[in-house]
Image (cartoon, rainbow, N blue to C red; front, top):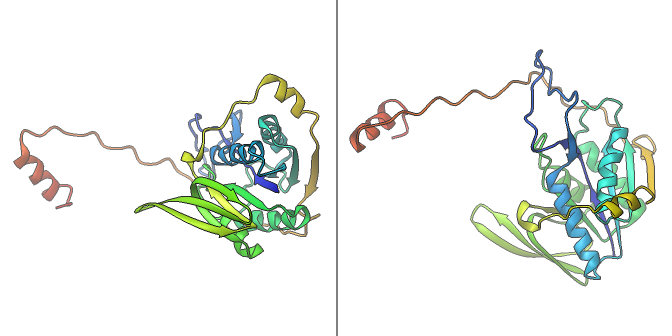
Length: 253
């Protein structure tokens, strides 16, 4: 079985995001970029499926600017077999919208014919949480979202999902699209030898036009601003004062 894993290049989760002075977006100048953490978990899960003998090939895909090659090389160093880069933007500030990403992935899935698509449940830059579901709808495939456990048994996949009420276990027919959550696994670090080997692994380069997809934005960012600072807390003398403040000032009682 072939496993396809889309990966996105985002601002590293350890970096404090800065808003541009004119409010037009986020400042990406000299900012450390890395693989979206949820996508990293998806890559790790694909590698574990291969190590277990369930999968025989892992293909990673990234859509965006040419610098996304760095993210793909990281996935290859972790253990993916080959990569596909889709050049769909010239400016790193142009984020490809989920519907366009899903359409591009649909075209790649039709070319590659994987048995399973493993996606991160969302990207930490825009938090859309939509691409996996859109891809499933476009392909007409089964879907399972927010996976915290995953096992493949022949033509079916057993997925434990994290939902508001607890955990839900479902069985879906293959081929399927599965989006993964944080508690599915802990991604491995790429070793130096594997990083060197990754430089020689194959990487195909395509464009959105090659795949017949229009990536023109449908949404426009009107304004970007910093969140309001939290007000300092206050100490209360007793329960009665606390209740009074919650009722009269906070208005929550």
